[in-house]
Amino acid sequence: MKASQFFISTLKEAPADAEVVSHQLMTRAGMIKKLGAGIYSYMPMGLRVIQKVEAIVREEMSRAGAVELTMPVVQPAELWQETGRFEKMGPELLRIKDRHDRDFVVQPTSEEVVTDIARQELRSYKQLPKNFYQIQTKFRDERRPRFGLMRGREFIMKDAYSFDRDEAAAKASYQVMAAAYRRIFDRFGLRYRAVAADSGAIGGDLSEEFQVIAATGEDAIVYCPGSAYAANMEKAEALAPAGPRPAAANAMAKTPTPGKSTCAGVAELLGVPLATTVKSLVLATDSLNEAGEILKSQVWLLLLRGDHDMNEVKVSKVPGLGAGFRFATVSEIDAHFGCKPGYLGPIGLKLPVKLVVDREVAVMADWICGANEPDFHMTGVNWGRDLPEPDQVADLRNVVEGDASPDGQGALAIERGIEVGHVFYLGSKYSQAMNATFLGEDGKPAHFEMGCYGIGITRLPAAAIEQNHDERGIIWPDAIAPFTVVICPIGMDRSPEVKAAAEQLHEQLVAAGVDVLLDDRGERPGAMFADWELIGVPHRVTIGDRGIKEGQVEYQHRRDAAATKVAVAEILGFLKGRIGT
Image 1 (cartoon, rainbow, N blue to C red):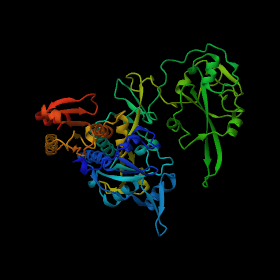
Image 2: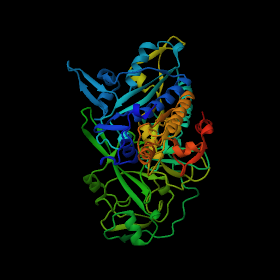
Image 3: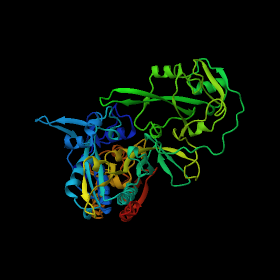
Image 4: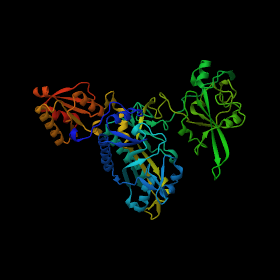
């Protein structure tokens, strides 16, 4: 490819709405162009990256035995009504009507359609297992689209769906996909972690997220440096502290804490560690009638250590809270505690509440909590002596760096990541909702056991940039770079020798199957180099008149601080060695 035949459009400044590095650099490098909020055109340079991502995904999905198809972007609402998602999904699901006033959706995902295909086409256990996948445009009507391709409304995704005869076979299919995903992400050339994720209402342990490591990542990844343990923050278990609860050493006392409504403020006032304080979180659950009206409410009190944060996913697994909870209203708090938030605690309640205590709090002694009176806290509080032992003890908190790893292999560490893939065992959730069955070996109908597996095709380049960039621009891994090599001739229009050497190297690299671009635009060296450093092509060869006379060209990897002189006769072999061709 020659630059004069391609389309290159770079900018010196990023648009004002580009908040993150990937959005800024993809726009400046001419890879994407904004059409509307969260909607982008993929320009030729960016499309090449996306196509390389797709090619790797297709190769590994085919190797894993998956079969590609394509399902419509616009889907009839009837299928979504079968599963209840037409009504249950929020405004992220774009609902539209056609000229006949029939309801449709613009797909954010395709479980319903693929399950409909399976119930029509997969009639016997002899046709199983089967894995269908697509690489297709999706749409989620994000309330606040931002960060360019990281959180757009329209995006491209690879989604796959496996169909099996029973749970054991489905779990085997899951493992095949989990292994394929590791091969895919290894080939991308990115630093990533496969982390255990929460399975939600379906339950079970077969759910993994694939996270690209980046300091700007939105997700917290918990891992043990001394073992293979890794989980997202929602899933990571906070173990109960080792050893027995210490004996009480202080008498309980009502202590003035004027104006100190936070654990941090109380700890500072009293000159004690924040870890000796206990925070009170008040939740409520509602019983509803068929019309959705509240019949009665139950108030819950959760106790966590003052320096810990509540994990909503873990809380949702507490018996009684799984059907959904909310934070209690001011009037509910006043009725049960007789006090405004900031001074709440489990002692001296006006009305009973359901108490759930974090594992850490259950083994604390001489702790501090609210006195249910403004400007006062209780100090020296102890279980068994000052209040009954807790009925429910559960893991309610986010882990913190230094916590013990659940596998017993050391302490936990935390880093940031960007989710770009997810493998998930679905079970029979959709097949039961849509009555999708096949005839089993016994001649009886059985529901399919399913799995789903997604990769954010257009999100992945943005994540790669967040991990690989510097002050000059993008640094692409070879596997997904728009071009692997760029040839930069200096004064090509003035020097027949430079032109001949550049075109010969270009032809040799093309013949060797290398994705190469020859920059024949006639730009000044500074402008030419700035463009390719911004675009992030990993390998650059500079050919100049002086070097040609000396029988040399200059090679520089995008990460190198300086160029390396290479003999003209050796440059082809040198490049092949550097790019592994």
